[in-house]
Length: 173
Image (spheres, rainbow, N blue to C red):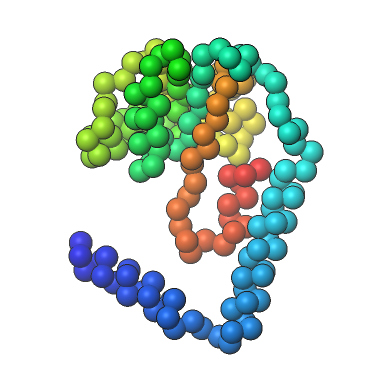
């Protein structure tokens, strides 16, 4: 409702125009957040290969793994991928947290006026837990996805600006 949007706008403007603490406190807070982000980046990127050669060859059909397809941006990403010809994107794995992600995707797409007539051979909706071994999919499905996927679009992210940076660690481990 307009009331909610007005209140949110007012709160954001108050944060921007009426900062709390001294100017030095604000600079220290920014530096602290930047240091935490750099630390997390170093922690979770240490030892990662710069490129991995598994699955299909680069010139073959693309298989896309899309996380967070049921969210707002994810629905549009899925619609864009689906609109590409099969000669460009052969398969799309949609990994989501909910056990009923296909039903949630249907509702999300209906709300946005997007297609809901999916080719079940081309688009597969799966429940996943990114913090679990094998993404919580089981060894067989995980191995299939690992060997087939050529493109990963990691779009699953909890949108809550009140959470501390540390609370996102399970999503990036």
